[in-house]
Length: 255
Image (cartoon, rainbow, N blue to C red; front, side):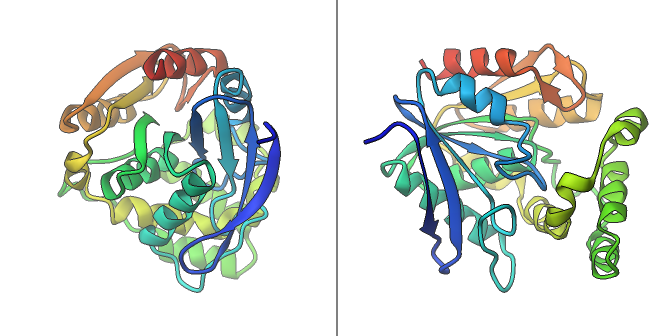
């Protein structure tokens, strides 16, 4: 098999999912966070580093990049998309996900036996009963009105992105995927952290020292709930880790 390739695979509902492969070694699928696809991914650098020892698959989640979109979003459809990529990777793989992508990776591991291990970077999972306002109607209204940049700014503010980061960021590259913010929010709202206690594979949950206490505690609590979960706090920025730091932690966990 050639080490580098791109292609599309059909998910269970017929939605085409675009994927890319690089490197050689045990298969590892990278799951991006909200709005990001392969061209805008914050995980591109770490994927390249990990390709030195792994066959790394990256893909565009539904509604983003070169992937298609279904008629109605459900978390189950996103799990099916990810499992279709795992099938392309040979039928079993480790997963590396960050933020909402980490939640999707954990959900896939809880529902399928083809996931060998998971590295989850700051999954925003809260304890049951935690009240979080549902902002999907407001986001969808902004998108429908053509204000995709406004929807992105509203989302960033709602999740606590520091004001200086918002001010310095350009929403332009992410505007085509603004409608999928509601998908990720649905994934989070419909994923009960207690449902993940059935995961029977090793899970490493990571958090950044530069994140706020809320994000770090969510990560720590998720690790504590998992039968084979472990937690590490690494040096980093707000809701982000340096590529080399993350790659080293992934390599050490998977070796």
